[in-house]
Image (cartoon, rainbow, N blue to C red; front, side, top):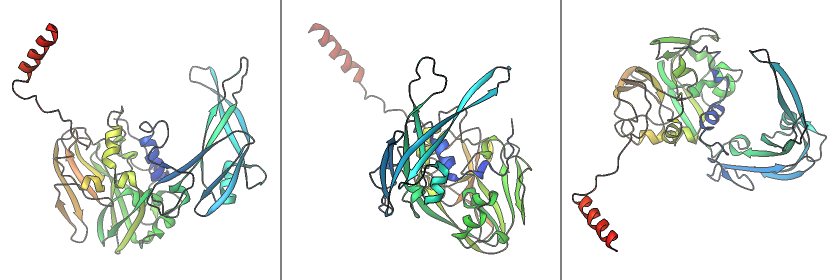
Length: 370
């Protein structure tokens, strides 16, 4: 099976970005897990988004978190980029640069406008129908979207989850330490009590090769070494081993889609080829969720023939057998007989009552007579 190198963890991307790409085929039109609102209100228990269409030269007003400002689409530049394909033919693609004016400012590139005014928004666009003979496309309009998980300090789109780290070995979801492999480790640990120097080593398990891959040793990450295999290298719910020299607490904001609706995500991506998330035969390391914790493994076995499931009890440094998955913020290992994924198993409707076919035949005869 083709392995994927991990520099470390394609997880230089954030957990929210991984969520988006997992759900992209499901919510192809727009992110319907947001509630559309004129204004975003932080702390109202609703995960909100506000979006407006802008044509070049048009200005719209936005309001969120007590901030009010105007945003003008000053210009859109289309930049052709020509590259050579493997067969030697040339192909032209187009990059876009969006210029915005904020509260009457001079036009700024999208990223510069966000940094200078402390705002964060997403831009999508629609091309105009190309006129005959026109070589470069033109943008008809752009859609600017502000989303609560980017504009609120404590978004209603996420749950605060914690993991108590004991001295010794700990099995934790990788999303707690996602910053370890970027330049943002101290920021990612700042909300908890753990410090970088507490961790002596971190391992992940490659279920395809059935061996451990060292991700981090005291003072250095192994950015180029080892492979986690296809089933784990892009898994945002992977769990990893941490050996800590001190007790501490890991804290993160986990998108509600992962903490409360993981079964929905798994069902939505189940028919994709190849599956974005899939267990392989043998042991697999995974993270729990609140919706899964409310069910037994038998109820959510999905396509799996489950042989065993355990969690690791860090205070006692012992394995603990499970009959149901743990909640969000906790991890478990699961042994399956073949490639599969958790979820609700296929069910068939009840059989018709005895004599139903006879009743149907009598009705059909009477219908023909009439």
